[in-house]
Amino acid sequence: MFNPIKVTDVTLRDGLEDFVLKYLRLDDLGRLVGLLDRAGFYSLDCWGGSTFYAALMDLKEDPWERLKKMRRAMTRTPIQMILRGRMLVGFKPYQDEVVRKFITRAASQGVDIFRIYDNLNDLENMRVAIDAAKELRKEVEATLLFSLNPHVTVDDYLQLASGLINMGADVICLNDSFGAMNPRQVETLVSTYRRYFAQPLRLHLHNNHQAALTSYQEGVRQGAELLDTTMAALAWSYGPPPVESLMFSLAGSSHDPNIDLDVLREAGEFLDLLKEKYRYREPAPRKMDNGLGPDYLPGPLQEFILEELKRRNARNRQRVACKEAQQVWSDLGYPVLKGRILEIVGLQAVENILSSRRYETIIPIMQNLIRGKYGRLHSPILLELQHRALAPEDLAVAALEKEGRLRALPGLEKEEDILTYSLFPEEAEAFFHMRAEGVRPPAPAPAAPAPGPYPLLGAIATPQLTLTHKGEEVWARLEGVGSVRKGKQVLFINIQDHLEEIEVQLAPREDGPPDYLVTFHGDTYRIRVSKTFPKEQEYTPVFLEINGQMEEFLIKNPANEKG
View 1 (tube, one colour):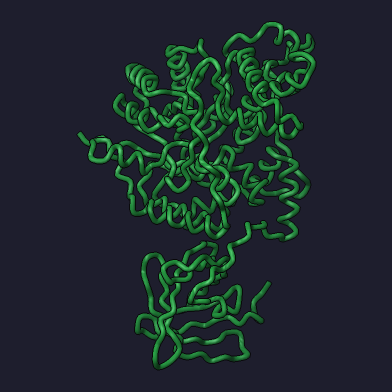
View 2: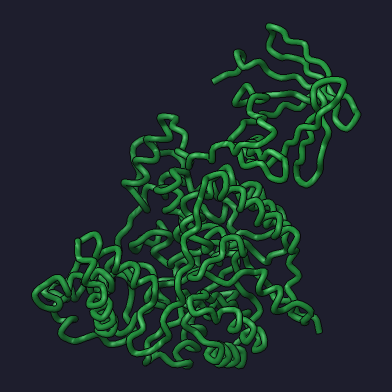
Protein backbone atom coordinates (compact mmCIF):
# COMPACT_ATOMS: atom_id res chain seq x y z
CA MET A 1 0.00 0.00 0.00
CA PHE A 2 1.47 3.34 -1.10
CA ASN A 3 1.24 5.81 1.75
CA PRO A 4 3.65 8.70 1.05
CA ILE A 5 4.73 10.94 3.91
CA LYS A 6 3.78 14.60 3.63
CA VAL A 7 6.89 16.73 4.05
CA THR A 8 6.92 20.41 4.99
CA ASP A 9 10.00 22.47 4.21
CA VAL A 10 10.98 24.77 7.11
CA THR A 11 14.24 26.06 5.61
CA LEU A 12 13.11 29.68 5.30
CA ARG A 13 12.27 29.86 9.00
CA ASP A 14 14.23 27.10 10.74
CA GLY A 15 17.23 26.65 8.48
CA LEU A 16 20.72 27.99 9.19
CA GLU A 17 19.58 30.96 11.26
CA ASP A 18 22.55 33.23 10.72
CA PHE A 19 21.95 33.15 6.95
CA VAL A 20 18.16 32.87 6.80
CA LEU A 21 17.48 35.74 9.20
CA LYS A 22 20.26 38.13 8.12
CA TYR A 23 21.04 37.50 4.46
CA LEU A 24 17.97 36.12 2.71
CA ARG A 25 16.56 39.37 1.39
CA LEU A 26 13.30 40.28 -0.31
CA ASP A 27 14.94 40.35 -3.75
CA ASP A 28 16.15 36.77 -3.26
CA LEU A 29 12.86 35.28 -2.10
CA GLY A 30 11.02 35.24 -5.41
CA ARG A 31 13.21 32.76 -7.23
CA LEU A 32 13.99 30.61 -4.17
CA VAL A 33 10.35 30.22 -3.16
CA GLY A 34 9.39 29.65 -6.79
CA LEU A 35 11.84 26.75 -6.94
CA LEU A 36 10.62 25.20 -3.68
CA ASP A 37 7.06 25.57 -4.94
CA ARG A 38 7.88 23.09 -7.71
CA ALA A 39 9.52 20.49 -5.45
CA GLY A 40 6.35 18.75 -4.23
CA PHE A 41 6.26 19.74 -0.54
CA TYR A 42 3.04 19.53 1.45
CA SER A 43 3.60 23.13 2.60
CA LEU A 44 6.34 25.73 3.05
CA ASP A 45 6.79 26.93 6.62
CA CYS A 46 8.31 30.29 5.74
CA TRP A 47 6.81 33.08 7.89
CA GLY A 48 6.14 33.92 11.50
CA GLY A 49 8.24 33.08 14.53
CA SER A 50 11.61 34.83 14.46
CA THR A 51 11.34 35.81 10.78
CA PHE A 52 8.98 38.72 11.47
CA TYR A 53 11.28 40.49 13.94
CA ALA A 54 14.42 39.63 11.95
CA ALA A 55 12.96 41.16 8.77
CA LEU A 56 12.24 44.37 10.64
CA MET A 57 15.49 44.59 12.61
CA ASP A 58 18.21 42.82 10.64
CA LEU A 59 17.04 43.10 7.04
CA LYS A 60 15.21 46.45 7.44
CA GLU A 61 12.34 45.08 5.35
CA ASP A 62 8.58 44.98 5.80
CA PRO A 63 7.69 41.44 6.95
CA TRP A 64 4.25 41.80 5.36
CA GLU A 65 5.84 42.60 1.99
CA ARG A 66 7.93 39.47 2.30
CA LEU A 67 4.77 37.44 2.84
CA LYS A 68 3.13 39.03 -0.23
CA LYS A 69 6.25 38.36 -2.30
CA MET A 70 6.22 34.69 -1.37
CA ARG A 71 2.51 34.38 -2.03
CA ARG A 72 2.91 35.81 -5.54
CA ALA A 73 5.76 33.40 -6.28
CA MET A 74 3.90 30.28 -5.08
CA THR A 75 1.08 28.73 -7.07
CA ARG A 76 1.08 25.10 -5.93
CA THR A 77 2.18 24.89 -2.31
CA PRO A 78 0.36 26.21 0.78
CA ILE A 79 2.13 28.80 2.95
CA GLN A 80 2.45 27.83 6.59
CA MET A 81 3.38 30.11 9.49
CA ILE A 82 4.12 29.66 13.17
CA LEU A 83 2.43 31.60 15.99
CA ARG A 84 3.34 31.71 19.67
CA GLY A 85 -0.27 31.64 20.83
CA ARG A 86 -1.33 35.01 22.20
CA MET A 87 2.29 36.18 21.98
CA LEU A 88 1.89 35.99 18.17
CA VAL A 89 5.36 36.70 16.71
CA GLY A 90 6.44 38.92 19.62
CA PHE A 91 7.81 38.50 23.10
CA LYS A 92 4.84 39.35 25.33
CA PRO A 93 1.13 38.51 25.45
CA TYR A 94 -1.23 40.57 23.31
CA GLN A 95 -4.89 41.32 23.78
CA ASP A 96 -7.49 39.27 21.95
CA GLU A 97 -8.24 42.09 19.50
CA VAL A 98 -4.61 42.15 18.35
CA VAL A 99 -4.49 38.37 18.03
CA ARG A 100 -7.62 38.25 15.89
CA LYS A 101 -6.61 41.15 13.66
CA PHE A 102 -3.13 39.73 13.13
CA ILE A 103 -4.42 36.32 12.11
CA THR A 104 -7.09 37.82 9.87
CA ARG A 105 -4.50 39.96 8.09
CA ALA A 106 -2.03 37.09 7.74
CA ALA A 107 -4.75 34.91 6.23
CA SER A 108 -5.79 37.61 3.76
CA GLN A 109 -2.16 38.04 2.67
CA GLY A 110 -1.67 34.36 1.88
CA VAL A 111 -1.16 32.17 4.96
CA ASP A 112 -3.01 28.86 4.52
CA ILE A 113 -1.87 26.88 7.58
CA PHE A 114 -1.38 28.24 11.09
CA ARG A 115 0.87 26.29 13.41
CA ILE A 116 0.09 27.49 16.93
CA TYR A 117 1.99 26.71 20.11
CA ASP A 118 2.57 28.13 23.57
CA ASN A 119 5.88 28.23 25.43
CA LEU A 120 4.26 26.66 28.50
CA ASN A 121 1.87 24.27 26.70
CA ASP A 122 -0.93 26.41 28.18
CA LEU A 123 -4.06 25.62 26.16
CA GLU A 124 -5.76 28.87 27.17
CA ASN A 125 -2.93 30.83 25.58
CA MET A 126 -3.73 29.12 22.26
CA ARG A 127 -7.52 29.27 22.38
CA VAL A 128 -8.12 32.69 20.79
CA ALA A 129 -5.60 32.08 18.00
CA ILE A 130 -7.13 28.68 17.19
CA ASP A 131 -10.65 30.13 17.20
CA ALA A 132 -9.64 33.00 14.91
CA ALA A 133 -7.94 30.73 12.37
CA LYS A 134 -10.84 28.26 12.38
CA GLU A 135 -13.35 31.07 11.80
CA LEU A 136 -11.39 31.94 8.67
CA ARG A 137 -11.55 28.29 7.53
CA LYS A 138 -7.79 27.91 7.71
CA GLU A 139 -6.00 24.72 8.67
CA VAL A 140 -4.82 24.72 12.28
CA GLU A 141 -1.82 22.73 13.48
CA ALA A 142 -1.90 22.85 17.25
CA THR A 143 1.47 22.06 18.77
CA LEU A 144 2.65 20.20 21.85
CA LEU A 145 6.15 21.04 23.02
CA PHE A 146 8.13 18.04 24.23
CA SER A 147 9.15 18.55 27.84
CA LEU A 148 12.15 17.29 29.79
CA ASN A 149 10.13 17.63 32.96
CA PRO A 150 10.57 14.27 34.75
CA HIS A 151 7.01 14.54 36.10
CA VAL A 152 5.34 14.80 32.65
CA THR A 153 3.92 11.47 31.46
CA VAL A 154 2.45 10.11 28.24
CA ASP A 155 -1.00 10.63 29.75
CA ASP A 156 -0.22 14.33 30.14
CA TYR A 157 0.54 14.62 26.41
CA LEU A 158 -2.66 12.75 25.57
CA GLN A 159 -4.66 15.09 27.76
CA LEU A 160 -3.12 18.13 26.07
CA ALA A 161 -3.77 16.66 22.63
CA SER A 162 -7.37 15.94 23.55
CA GLY A 163 -7.86 19.53 24.70
CA LEU A 164 -6.43 20.92 21.45
CA ILE A 165 -8.56 18.63 19.32
CA ASN A 166 -11.64 19.73 21.25
CA MET A 167 -10.69 23.33 20.42
CA GLY A 168 -10.80 22.41 16.73
CA ALA A 169 -7.23 21.50 15.81
CA ASP A 170 -7.01 19.82 12.39
CA VAL A 171 -3.50 18.45 12.97
CA ILE A 172 -1.46 17.84 16.10
CA CYS A 173 2.25 18.63 15.93
CA LEU A 174 4.74 17.14 18.37
CA ASN A 175 7.64 19.59 18.60
CA ASP A 176 11.07 18.84 20.04
CA SER A 177 13.29 21.85 19.37
CA PHE A 178 16.28 20.40 21.24
CA GLY A 179 16.36 16.96 19.67
CA ALA A 180 16.03 15.42 23.12
CA MET A 181 13.55 12.71 22.12
CA ASN A 182 15.05 9.34 21.33
CA PRO A 183 13.46 6.88 18.86
CA ARG A 184 11.96 4.81 21.69
CA GLN A 185 10.14 7.83 23.11
CA VAL A 186 8.89 8.74 19.65
CA GLU A 187 7.61 5.19 19.20
CA THR A 188 5.72 5.32 22.51
CA LEU A 189 4.19 8.75 22.00
CA VAL A 190 3.16 8.23 18.36
CA SER A 191 1.72 4.74 18.84
CA THR A 192 -0.22 5.85 21.94
CA TYR A 193 -1.55 8.95 20.18
CA ARG A 194 -2.61 6.88 17.17
CA ARG A 195 -4.51 4.51 19.46
CA TYR A 196 -6.80 7.30 20.68
CA PHE A 197 -6.99 10.00 18.00
CA ALA A 198 -7.74 10.11 14.28
CA GLN A 199 -6.33 13.58 13.57
CA PRO A 200 -3.07 13.56 11.56
CA LEU A 201 0.14 13.79 13.57
CA ARG A 202 3.19 15.83 12.58
CA LEU A 203 6.71 15.43 13.96
CA HIS A 204 8.98 18.47 14.19
CA LEU A 205 12.29 17.20 15.58
CA HIS A 206 15.66 18.92 15.67
CA ASN A 207 18.96 17.16 15.20
CA ASN A 208 20.93 18.31 18.27
CA HIS A 209 21.76 14.70 19.17
CA GLN A 210 21.87 13.47 15.56
CA ALA A 211 18.92 11.15 16.17
CA ALA A 212 16.16 13.06 14.36
CA LEU A 213 16.27 10.97 11.18
CA THR A 214 16.07 7.68 13.09
CA SER A 215 13.26 9.09 15.21
CA TYR A 216 11.41 10.16 12.06
CA GLN A 217 11.67 6.65 10.64
CA GLU A 218 10.27 5.19 13.86
CA GLY A 219 7.50 7.79 13.96
CA VAL A 220 6.49 6.99 10.39
CA ARG A 221 6.31 3.28 11.20
CA GLN A 222 3.98 4.05 14.12
CA GLY A 223 1.63 6.25 12.09
CA ALA A 224 2.94 9.83 11.90
CA GLU A 225 1.78 11.34 8.61
CA LEU A 226 3.70 14.63 8.39
CA LEU A 227 7.37 15.54 8.90
CA ASP A 228 9.42 18.75 8.87
CA THR A 229 12.79 19.02 7.13
CA THR A 230 15.24 21.62 5.85
CA MET A 231 17.27 21.73 2.65
CA ALA A 232 20.79 20.35 2.95
CA ALA A 233 22.20 23.69 1.75
CA LEU A 234 20.92 25.39 4.92
CA ALA A 235 20.73 22.47 7.35
CA TRP A 236 22.52 22.89 10.68
CA SER A 237 23.10 20.84 13.78
CA TYR A 238 20.41 22.61 15.82
CA GLY A 239 17.73 22.41 13.10
CA PRO A 240 15.54 19.70 11.57
CA PRO A 241 17.33 17.13 9.41
CA PRO A 242 17.86 17.60 5.63
CA VAL A 243 15.08 16.49 3.30
CA GLU A 244 17.69 14.84 1.09
CA SER A 245 18.63 12.49 3.96
CA LEU A 246 14.97 11.69 4.58
CA MET A 247 14.47 10.94 0.88
CA PHE A 248 17.44 8.56 0.95
CA SER A 249 16.20 6.77 4.07
CA LEU A 250 12.64 6.29 2.72
CA ALA A 251 13.55 5.67 -0.93
CA GLY A 252 11.76 2.68 -2.37
CA SER A 253 9.42 2.29 0.60
CA SER A 254 5.67 2.83 0.64
CA HIS A 255 6.29 6.08 2.53
CA ASP A 256 8.56 7.67 -0.11
CA PRO A 257 7.53 11.38 -0.16
CA ASN A 258 8.44 11.75 -3.84
CA ILE A 259 10.10 15.16 -3.54
CA ASP A 260 11.77 16.37 -6.76
CA LEU A 261 15.49 16.16 -6.02
CA ASP A 262 16.41 17.94 -9.26
CA VAL A 263 14.48 21.00 -8.13
CA LEU A 264 16.11 20.80 -4.70
CA ARG A 265 19.50 20.63 -6.36
CA GLU A 266 18.72 23.74 -8.38
CA ALA A 267 17.52 25.55 -5.24
CA GLY A 268 20.65 24.46 -3.40
CA GLU A 269 22.86 25.81 -6.18
CA PHE A 270 21.01 29.12 -6.02
CA LEU A 271 21.59 29.30 -2.26
CA ASP A 272 25.28 28.57 -2.79
CA LEU A 273 25.41 31.46 -5.24
CA LEU A 274 23.75 33.77 -2.74
CA LYS A 275 26.34 32.80 -0.13
CA GLU A 276 29.03 33.52 -2.68
CA LYS A 277 27.42 36.82 -3.66
CA TYR A 278 27.31 38.08 -0.07
CA ARG A 279 30.66 36.48 0.85
CA TYR A 280 28.88 34.56 3.58
CA ARG A 281 31.01 32.19 5.62
CA GLU A 282 29.16 29.37 7.29
CA PRO A 283 29.86 29.02 11.01
CA ALA A 284 31.86 26.05 12.20
CA PRO A 285 29.70 22.95 12.83
CA ARG A 286 28.42 22.87 16.38
CA LYS A 287 29.23 19.91 18.52
CA MET A 288 26.50 17.47 19.36
CA ASP A 289 24.75 18.27 22.63
CA ASN A 290 25.96 16.30 25.63
CA GLY A 291 24.01 13.16 26.37
CA LEU A 292 20.90 13.50 28.48
CA GLY A 293 21.46 13.11 32.18
CA PRO A 294 21.23 14.92 35.51
CA ASP A 295 23.63 17.63 34.28
CA TYR A 296 22.01 18.12 30.86
CA LEU A 297 21.49 21.67 29.65
CA PRO A 298 20.47 22.33 26.02
CA GLY A 299 23.17 23.82 23.82
CA PRO A 300 21.18 26.98 22.93
CA LEU A 301 20.80 27.80 26.65
CA GLN A 302 24.52 27.32 27.24
CA GLU A 303 25.28 29.66 24.36
CA PHE A 304 22.81 32.24 25.65
CA ILE A 305 24.45 32.14 29.09
CA LEU A 306 27.90 32.53 27.55
CA GLU A 307 26.84 35.63 25.61
CA GLU A 308 25.26 37.17 28.73
CA LEU A 309 28.44 36.49 30.75
CA LYS A 310 30.55 38.14 28.05
CA ARG A 311 28.29 41.17 28.18
CA ARG A 312 28.78 41.40 31.93
CA ASN A 313 32.54 40.71 31.82
CA ALA A 314 32.21 37.37 33.61
CA ARG A 315 33.24 34.92 30.88
CA ASN A 316 35.17 32.79 33.39
CA ARG A 317 31.96 31.95 35.32
CA GLN A 318 30.38 29.87 32.56
CA ARG A 319 30.58 26.50 34.29
CA VAL A 320 29.11 27.85 37.52
CA ALA A 321 26.37 29.70 35.61
CA CYS A 322 25.35 26.59 33.68
CA LYS A 323 25.14 24.59 36.91
CA GLU A 324 23.04 27.37 38.44
CA ALA A 325 20.78 27.39 35.36
CA GLN A 326 20.00 23.73 35.97
CA GLN A 327 18.93 24.61 39.51
CA VAL A 328 16.82 27.60 38.39
CA TRP A 329 15.16 25.37 35.81
CA SER A 330 14.41 22.82 38.53
CA ASP A 331 13.09 25.53 40.89
CA LEU A 332 10.60 26.57 38.18
CA GLY A 333 9.34 23.01 37.73
CA TYR A 334 11.22 22.24 34.49
CA PRO A 335 9.18 24.34 32.02
CA VAL A 336 9.93 23.80 28.32
CA LEU A 337 13.11 25.74 27.53
CA LYS A 338 11.91 27.56 24.46
CA GLY A 339 11.92 31.22 23.49
CA ARG A 340 11.21 33.57 26.36
CA ILE A 341 11.44 30.81 28.99
CA LEU A 342 14.98 29.92 27.94
CA GLU A 343 16.00 33.57 28.28
CA ILE A 344 14.42 33.87 31.73
CA VAL A 345 16.26 30.82 33.08
CA GLY A 346 19.58 31.99 31.63
CA LEU A 347 19.28 35.58 32.84
CA GLN A 348 18.20 34.59 36.36
CA ALA A 349 21.05 32.07 36.61
CA VAL A 350 23.61 34.72 35.69
CA GLU A 351 22.02 37.17 38.15
CA ASN A 352 22.21 34.55 40.91
CA ILE A 353 25.92 33.79 40.50
CA LEU A 354 26.84 37.48 40.33
CA SER A 355 24.90 38.28 43.52
CA SER A 356 25.89 37.55 47.10
CA ARG A 357 23.13 34.92 47.43
CA ARG A 358 20.66 33.07 45.22
CA TYR A 359 17.56 35.05 44.25
CA GLU A 360 18.82 38.13 46.04
CA THR A 361 17.34 39.90 43.02
CA ILE A 362 14.53 38.30 41.07
CA ILE A 363 14.62 39.81 37.60
CA PRO A 364 11.33 41.39 36.41
CA ILE A 365 10.59 38.88 33.65
CA MET A 366 11.14 36.04 36.15
CA GLN A 367 8.56 37.69 38.42
CA ASN A 368 6.20 38.01 35.47
CA LEU A 369 6.61 34.32 34.68
CA ILE A 370 5.77 33.29 38.26
CA ARG A 371 2.85 35.73 38.38
CA GLY A 372 1.30 34.06 35.34
CA LYS A 373 1.90 36.73 32.73
CA TYR A 374 3.15 34.17 30.21
CA GLY A 375 0.70 31.42 31.17
CA ARG A 376 0.29 28.69 33.72
CA LEU A 377 3.28 26.74 35.02
CA HIS A 378 2.19 23.09 35.06
CA SER A 379 4.55 21.81 37.76
CA PRO A 380 4.93 23.13 41.31
CA ILE A 381 7.76 25.63 41.70
CA LEU A 382 9.99 26.23 44.69
CA LEU A 383 7.65 27.56 47.39
CA GLU A 384 10.14 30.07 48.75
CA LEU A 385 10.70 31.47 45.25
CA GLN A 386 6.97 31.75 44.68
CA HIS A 387 6.41 33.67 47.94
CA ARG A 388 9.23 36.09 47.16
CA ALA A 389 8.06 36.77 43.61
CA LEU A 390 4.39 37.32 44.46
CA ALA A 391 3.53 40.49 46.30
CA PRO A 392 0.08 40.40 48.02
CA GLU A 393 -1.37 43.06 45.73
CA ASP A 394 -0.46 40.99 42.67
CA LEU A 395 -2.37 37.86 43.61
CA ALA A 396 -5.78 39.01 42.45
CA VAL A 397 -4.67 40.00 38.97
CA ALA A 398 -1.66 37.83 38.28
CA ALA A 399 -3.47 35.08 36.40
CA LEU A 400 -5.51 37.55 34.34
CA GLU A 401 -2.79 40.03 33.47
CA LYS A 402 -2.59 40.79 29.78
CA GLU A 403 -0.83 43.53 27.89
CA GLY A 404 -0.19 44.38 24.31
CA ARG A 405 -3.07 46.49 23.05
CA LEU A 406 -3.62 47.71 19.50
CA ARG A 407 -1.58 50.90 18.99
CA ALA A 408 -1.06 53.30 16.11
CA LEU A 409 1.10 56.28 15.24
CA PRO A 410 -0.48 59.38 13.69
CA GLY A 411 -0.55 58.94 9.95
CA LEU A 412 -0.54 55.13 9.92
CA GLU A 413 -3.28 53.93 7.59
CA LYS A 414 -2.36 50.41 6.50
CA GLU A 415 -3.57 47.75 8.90
CA GLU A 416 -0.29 45.86 8.45
CA ASP A 417 1.64 48.90 9.68
CA ILE A 418 -0.67 49.32 12.68
CA LEU A 419 -0.14 45.67 13.62
CA THR A 420 3.63 45.91 13.19
CA TYR A 421 3.71 48.99 15.41
CA SER A 422 1.50 47.28 18.00
CA LEU A 423 3.94 44.38 18.20
CA PHE A 424 7.25 46.28 18.06
CA PRO A 425 6.69 50.02 18.57
CA GLU A 426 10.29 51.26 18.67
CA GLU A 427 11.58 49.05 15.87
CA ALA A 428 8.56 49.78 13.67
CA GLU A 429 8.83 53.54 14.13
CA ALA A 430 12.47 53.49 13.02
CA PHE A 431 11.56 51.36 9.99
CA PHE A 432 8.64 53.62 9.00
CA HIS A 433 10.93 56.65 9.16
CA MET A 434 13.49 54.94 6.93
CA ARG A 435 10.76 53.93 4.48
CA ALA A 436 9.29 57.44 4.38
CA GLU A 437 12.72 58.87 3.59
CA GLY A 438 13.01 56.47 0.68
CA VAL A 439 16.09 54.82 2.10
CA ARG A 440 16.77 51.51 0.40
CA PRO A 441 17.46 48.71 2.92
CA PRO A 442 21.22 48.22 3.24
CA ALA A 443 22.30 45.00 1.58
CA PRO A 444 25.37 42.96 2.48
CA ALA A 445 28.27 44.00 0.27
CA PRO A 446 28.42 41.83 -2.88
CA ALA A 447 31.56 39.91 -3.58
CA ALA A 448 34.12 41.64 -5.74
CA PRO A 449 34.26 40.27 -9.28
CA ALA A 450 36.66 37.39 -9.47
CA PRO A 451 39.50 37.67 -12.00
CA GLY A 452 38.90 35.61 -15.07
CA PRO A 453 39.27 35.48 -18.82
CA TYR A 454 35.92 37.15 -19.47
CA PRO A 455 35.71 40.60 -17.80
CA LEU A 456 32.13 41.40 -18.72
CA LEU A 457 31.49 44.37 -16.46
CA GLY A 458 32.59 46.76 -19.16
CA ALA A 459 29.71 45.58 -21.32
CA ILE A 460 27.24 46.81 -18.69
CA ALA A 461 27.47 50.58 -18.81
CA THR A 462 24.14 51.37 -17.13
CA PRO A 463 23.20 49.97 -13.70
CA GLN A 464 19.50 49.74 -14.66
CA LEU A 465 17.96 49.28 -18.10
CA THR A 466 14.37 49.59 -19.22
CA LEU A 467 13.68 47.84 -22.51
CA THR A 468 10.69 47.01 -24.68
CA HIS A 469 10.35 43.81 -26.70
CA LYS A 470 7.24 43.06 -28.76
CA GLY A 471 5.31 45.73 -26.89
CA GLU A 472 6.17 44.51 -23.37
CA GLU A 473 8.33 46.74 -21.17
CA VAL A 474 10.58 45.29 -18.48
CA TRP A 475 13.42 46.66 -16.34
CA ALA A 476 16.57 44.94 -15.22
CA ARG A 477 19.36 45.92 -12.84
CA LEU A 478 22.77 44.40 -12.14
CA GLU A 479 22.83 43.46 -8.44
CA GLY A 480 26.14 41.69 -8.16
CA VAL A 481 28.90 39.74 -9.85
CA GLY A 482 29.86 36.24 -8.85
CA SER A 483 32.93 34.22 -9.65
CA VAL A 484 33.97 32.70 -12.96
CA ARG A 485 32.60 29.17 -12.99
CA LYS A 486 34.00 26.81 -15.63
CA GLY A 487 34.84 29.74 -17.86
CA LYS A 488 31.45 31.43 -17.39
CA GLN A 489 30.99 34.72 -15.57
CA VAL A 490 28.14 34.61 -13.04
CA LEU A 491 25.93 37.72 -12.89
CA PHE A 492 23.03 38.42 -10.54
CA ILE A 493 20.36 40.38 -12.38
CA ASN A 494 17.23 41.81 -10.77
CA ILE A 495 14.44 41.49 -13.36
CA GLN A 496 11.17 43.07 -12.27
CA ASP A 497 11.97 42.44 -8.57
CA HIS A 498 13.06 38.83 -9.21
CA LEU A 499 16.74 38.09 -8.63
CA GLU A 500 18.02 35.81 -11.38
CA GLU A 501 21.37 34.12 -11.83
CA ILE A 502 22.79 34.33 -15.35
CA GLU A 503 25.99 32.79 -16.71
CA VAL A 504 27.72 34.61 -19.56
CA GLN A 505 30.60 33.37 -21.69
CA LEU A 506 32.33 35.08 -24.62
CA ALA A 507 32.53 33.06 -27.85
CA PRO A 508 35.22 34.60 -30.13
CA ARG A 509 34.55 34.95 -33.87
CA GLU A 510 37.04 35.44 -36.68
CA ASP A 511 34.88 37.88 -38.63
CA GLY A 512 33.84 40.31 -35.92
CA PRO A 513 33.11 40.93 -32.26
CA PRO A 514 32.54 37.86 -30.07
CA ASP A 515 29.13 36.34 -29.44
CA TYR A 516 27.69 36.04 -25.94
CA LEU A 517 26.66 32.60 -24.69
CA VAL A 518 24.04 33.35 -22.03
CA THR A 519 22.74 30.55 -19.76
CA PHE A 520 19.44 31.35 -18.05
CA HIS A 521 17.25 28.80 -16.18
CA GLY A 522 19.30 25.96 -17.68
CA ASP A 523 18.92 27.07 -21.33
CA THR A 524 21.84 28.59 -23.28
CA TYR A 525 21.32 31.29 -25.92
CA ARG A 526 23.89 32.54 -28.45
CA ILE A 527 23.46 36.30 -28.70
CA ARG A 528 25.10 38.51 -31.32
CA VAL A 529 24.76 42.28 -31.36
CA SER A 530 23.80 43.01 -34.97
CA LYS A 531 22.95 46.70 -35.20
CA THR A 532 22.35 49.67 -32.94
CA PHE A 533 21.02 53.08 -33.84
CA PRO A 534 22.04 55.56 -31.14
CA LYS A 535 19.65 58.50 -31.05
CA GLU A 536 19.04 61.43 -28.77
CA GLN A 537 15.49 60.23 -28.27
CA GLU A 538 13.61 58.36 -25.57
CA TYR A 539 14.46 54.89 -26.93
CA THR A 540 17.44 53.40 -28.78
CA PRO A 541 16.64 50.52 -31.19
CA VAL A 542 18.95 47.53 -30.80
CA PHE A 543 18.88 44.44 -33.03
CA LEU A 544 20.09 41.20 -31.47
CA GLU A 545 20.54 37.89 -33.24
CA ILE A 546 19.42 35.23 -30.72
CA ASN A 547 20.15 31.65 -31.80
CA GLY A 548 20.15 32.84 -35.41
CA GLN A 549 16.84 34.74 -35.20
CA MET A 550 16.79 38.55 -35.39
CA GLU A 551 14.93 40.39 -32.59
CA GLU A 552 14.40 44.12 -32.08
CA PHE A 553 14.61 45.73 -28.63
CA LEU A 554 13.96 49.33 -27.63
CA ILE A 555 16.21 50.44 -24.79
CA LYS A 556 15.18 53.51 -22.82
CA ASN A 557 17.95 56.06 -22.65
CA PRO A 558 19.15 56.60 -19.05
CA ALA A 559 18.69 60.36 -19.35
CA ASN A 560 14.98 59.80 -19.86
CA GLU A 561 14.56 57.45 -16.88
CA LYS A 562 12.34 58.81 -14.16
CA GLY A 563 13.28 58.88 -10.58
